[in-house]
Length: 170
Image (cartoon, rainbow, N blue to C red):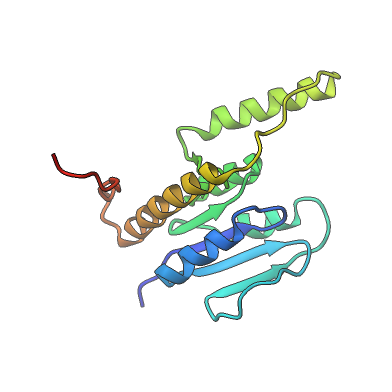
């Protein structure tokens, strides 16, 4: 039996749970929401909720131990994203940024720099507020990465064609 794409969601404080659910249902994808507390999720055989210990990084450890090529991870946690990219998974942040082998190093360096600045007492700007444009960017990125993960599993070695927005003809 051929494997299919699995979505893993770092669910604690994830602002796009409803969007992930809609994509999962539309594409019939197994989806695993992982968090430190019980989540209210739709009753669906494709949706799974995993509650891990309240220890720091317990959800990250659970996800990182299970991802592989064909997995798509939704997380804003850069160290978790790094572990997932190393395992061959695709990673999308809730704001629609794709973290891959080409971008994860810079993301880690930026995170570490900001942590060092905050530790030294500097005030840094937090993330911008989450808005409708972020949801749109997330949905586009998730659709694209699900398609790419399916191609990873198919072993074609080729990237699927990009999704192009519909434009009126001239």
